[in-house]
Image 1 (cartoon, rainbow, N blue to C red):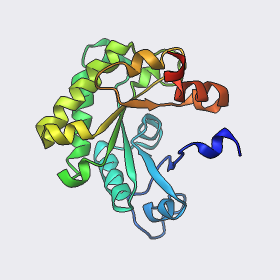
Image 2: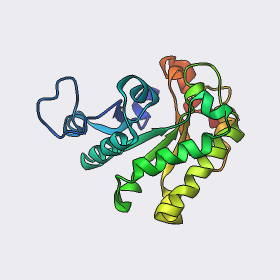
Image 3: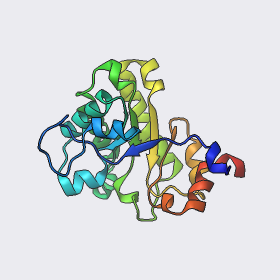
Image 4: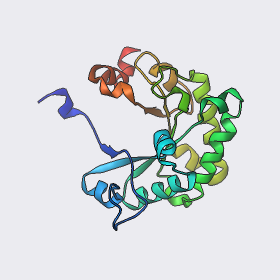
Length: 203
């Protein structure tokens, strides 16, 4: 038996179709992902939005499909560099939240996870400061409270994603409204990813 045998690991998909079935070659339905044992599915990742033209409405529909399949959607939101430089990052991200969650009734919304991923920090080596992450994650929490009430807002996990690594994860995770990390490139290095997961051991 190895250390990995004692780890609580769940699987997820990187995307899900809005269609439950039918002739949609290249897409994968929520039913298929659930059959494979997936517990989570990422929806609205910035690359899906950029390269496949996904709209906030479609992201909301995909989140609804994931929930209907018994999985937790990890809903990605976040701003490009031009929006950040213009100081409009909070308003931009909250507009995404409003549009996506318009598709979700309150009982299902509480089961979702949100990942704030500033696009300019994904895979670039640049990272939002802990304060930057808290500013937007805190604003998201406040918006969820206005939509669904404080109890539901506190129950929804909000992650930060964007060049998370072992050297910055502790500081990011110390912020009040950051509940976890959405780790990208660093997850391809097993030792680095293990250090991120076990960051409390190094404090």
